[in-house]
Length: 271
Image 1 (tube, rainbow, N blue to C red):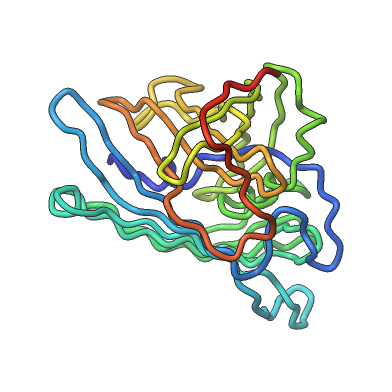
Image 2 (tube, helix red, strand yellow; image 1 turned 180 degrees about the horizontal axis):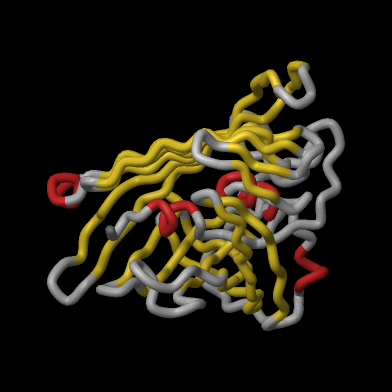
């Protein structure tokens, strides 16, 4: 339960002003890899709970409603439990999205979830002409700008921060999950500098709205720090859950589009 996929991956809904052409995005490139360590804290335990990774690759995909093959970005998000947590609650999650190289809107979304005794496999086709999403279970209507949980992360990394510089400004994005369309409202809380294992990193602090219930007790239980540079990478996530708290921290990166900005010591940023 602690490493529910909705906690691991729906953690950074910061939105975008999209200006890419022919896959030449300003914030990332193919070959980029981001690795995160997940920590869990409670009154009785404080330990590493798992690891998550996001990877971008070039690929091609046959798109049925177009009856043609297209060059796409293939983005994979994976998460697994570690150590003692793996013994008590095994997590092996993989999420894949195949997105248009110009718009980042997904054509195909694949989910393979194994969390404790729960297992689920989804294969979703997004038809951008008929505005429908189809699985083996059903077909539903979708908005023209709907994303899946992985494509939304990368779409939002193209955000023009200056458009949302005011504290408490908000943006809303649509995303597909579990045969339904949801939205997340994202609050922008200003600028800060956070200490991580990689050093002191100037960041933008945001709070994405989460679904309350099994994992979260509040609508805005989570804070996310995104690099205040051209990469817009989530470097730190801190969240309360029903029991205890979870923190996720960037520990490794590879093939960034832009140099990751760091500073020698912590200097609090002013809006």
